[in-house]
Image (cartoon, rainbow, N blue to C red):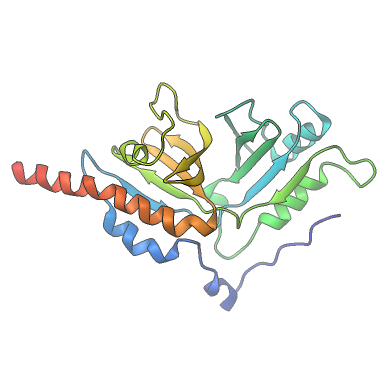
Length: 226
């Protein structure tokens, strides 16, 4: 069965669209720390996210890879990019395709159409290759934490070894931040994306702001010494 076409958001509907952490925008701006111990956080809302189930090497995997324009990641922690998506490894046959930020719009929900497009590559009923593609765009929001102190902030709430020798750029894992399940994805030397489920967005956002306070105080103290 083909999913229904998405509804583009226009006029009043667009104005009513609200991200899971929109209420924290001012708190995020106020928490920004500049300088050598700097750190900042922002929400990247409305990213198209597709849940993909396919066994690597199967006909279904090949169909999905062709439709997305990127190969499936090869194992735990790995990611692949292509076709405007980054694919994150979630399990042996489970992946999350996250659209590039440049493809995001507050005025259009692309998820259902993309899920239908990629899902159709699996074939028609009766001859369908094994696999599934589901729109999960509303399931999670995305926080981007950046700056020299970003790693130190995350280490306050994540027990996984995030040292660059183990957790390099392009690595993504399912982990726990302050008892909340999240996906953690390192996108740059000092830049990380944290993807909590939408229902935990407020909690995770406020936790990040609180964990950043130390660096604002230490930065101000250092400036006073000079």
